[in-house]
Image 1 (cartoon, one colour):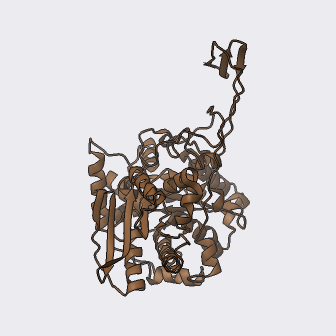
Image 2: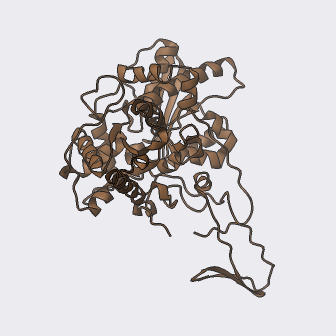
Length: 480
């Protein structure tokens, strides 16, 4: 059996919904009815069913990653899916092989190693190692360079692009909905959380999928930028780049492994490996190193514009990317001419389910919400099914408190309550400088590489599709 990251086998996670009762790829066991019944025994070479008519070895089941991506019938998507290509062991093996190929002059096999670091792991690791976020980003870059990385990037550009495309998509949906009430396009539901998307695909299928934004997540937009924009700039094939992202959530491993994000042009995945905050901590502990022991280096900036002085940015006030805040402000100005600054949400059932409205002449013209955690998501889905959902847009995240509390963030130290740790990370986030998606850094890439708003290239590379999953009603008997 292959070795996998220990972090993937943790069972105390909260980044996915309660498992469903069915598997999409079950095995039908043909057993003759017997008054004496049957029992299952475990022997060294497998599982056996003992009945009055004899003993029968049960069939083993081969389940692909795509099967598990679409179903949490036997395990949650993050707790139990053992993905060889997504382990820290596999990452270190790739890095070691790359260094060996360099040393023996086997240049045809050498890959360009690119790491992309998202904001939430930086904050998590900064808290763990008692650093400020900027210092943490530089020490992380130094650590990855010591492992053999060629480029270290931040997600700033892809975060900005995700917001830009999401707001464009919302305006189109809003205007189309207003002119055709039968064409249900609202509420638009955010799509950057793969745990939520996976749940929607397998549990609610074609009913819920039309509401979900088609805009790719920042991780997958970053995959396009690395395997296409950066590849062109370096004059290498996308398949010769090994792209690693550092993320706060195990489900990002599943997202990166979706067939939708395999590029036929490059013959490779846009993201080859996802490593989480807690896995970085484990790698450092295994080597008995502290993050501060690595020489700080600057984050790389290959985007054809002057590099900002800072590496770490916040997107509005939400630690999950700022979708609700940003799109609400943009829609208020674009649709109703209102320039908004601070936003005041009202908590509903709990702080993880809150809403904000814009009124014109005593009428609510925009109603947005944030729904974090699956209890709130289930309430939202029930509202949709009853035709009682009043929202135009909902920012949906599987984890309570959103991505700063991702299931793969570093665990609390020294008995600190998890809620208090999340609160401290939120305070960290609020102190970060705010990113401007319309700034020259992102605008240049958007216009020159993606050809701007509504272009065929933007539609192709910044958007994706989702798929309802058919379930089989045969007996479940899964063996791992």
